Amino acid sequence: MPVLVDTNLLLRSLDPNHLMNACAVHALTQLRGQGETLHIVPQNLIEFWNVYTRPLERNGLGRIPEEASLEVQQLKSLSILMPDTAAIYVEWEQLVSRYQIRGVNVHDARLVAAMQVHGLTHILTFNARDFTRYAEITVVEPTSL
Image (tube, rainbow, N blue to C red; front, side):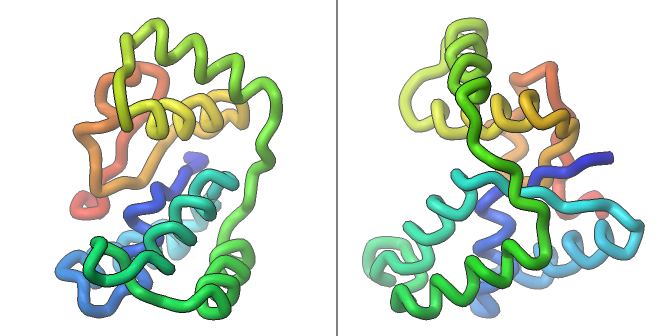
């Protein structure tokens, strides 16, 4: 099963102080151990950088850009980075119209659009509720692995 890893899982797997760190690490280890290929898209890395370098008092991890750069390189070496394409926008526009998406949920719709364009069927996420509306994909919760 081709799996897109949601940004929240990437962040929690690298934050040893987070309550869900062990679960995130376990889920990624389980999937890799089962021979599954983990995928990411540029949006994951952009969101990752945002939270990783955001100050602690603003719900970030407070790391410096040099650390973020090293982590991004590591994430790219452990996953397949699928490219952004013009087709992703076209699919995104169809999804937000079909599902009447509002506000911040447009970002999740863009991940689903990228999944559709690249033939990915499953997303590994702690935010299952944000993705269950999309009949096109299967949500995998880390606690289920």
